[in-house]
Image 1: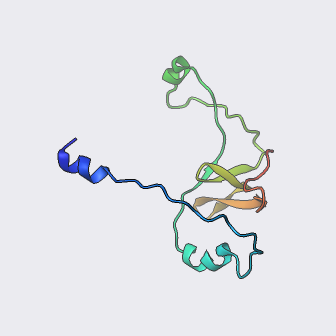
Image 2: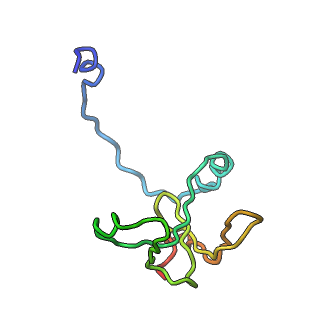
Image 3: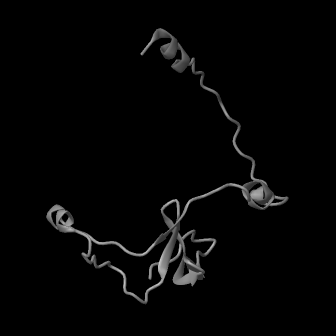
Length: 118
């Protein structure tokens, strides 16, 4: 590491004392409600998980065009909708014109933060 980079990463730290929090009743609008207009334009990656399979390396190397890979999900089971690798909803596969789509059938409970297991 260069001297300049080392200086940039070195900070003088000083301990501070914080006053204890007072026991007050929260008032006003929740932070989340006031932030919704700002958060509305934030882009997130949404993934739909069809299923998974576990293979040995040898089995993986044997796959070729025409091979069938059996997944761990039943054909009539709803698919998982994930945001940041967390299941937030489930739904069924539909056709939207020439594209795949997903009709949402179950959403996350706000207090739990994720959809319960199937």
